[in-house]
Length: 156
Image 1 (tube, rainbow, N blue to C red):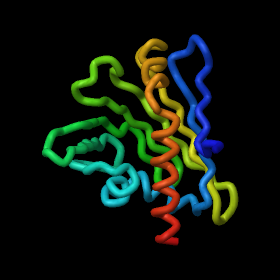
Image 2: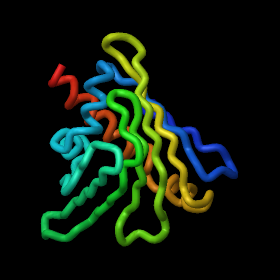
Image 3: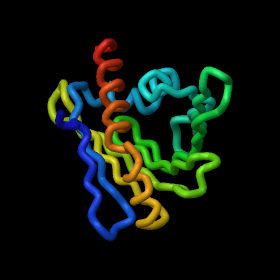
Image 4: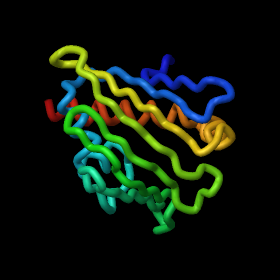
């Protein structure tokens, strides 16, 4: 089965480019990245904090059935341009292998009912990027983007 979210990772580089076309109006896609309740639903994690503004910050956390924290991440939003662009850092707690990454998310309208997400992700080193790519990263981001699209179609 072909994955809808495409990942371009050139050898020897410390970044990657993620693209995905959505059958959603641009405003709905952007809303899915900016509103805490929506982020929690499509990411499948608890949003402890999400300040969707320049110089805002965020914190996400996922716990298992026994109450153990299995995922915790945070970052700072450096640029927030409504319906166009979000530039932010991303850091997983208790995961020194992956370091801090910079994410530039750009939202492009294609038609009145479709749009495209461009994510440029920059890691501290090529080795860190390659470690991420050894995980089921492509499947995970596709799963999340599929959930996002399904959720937001209910809000059309």
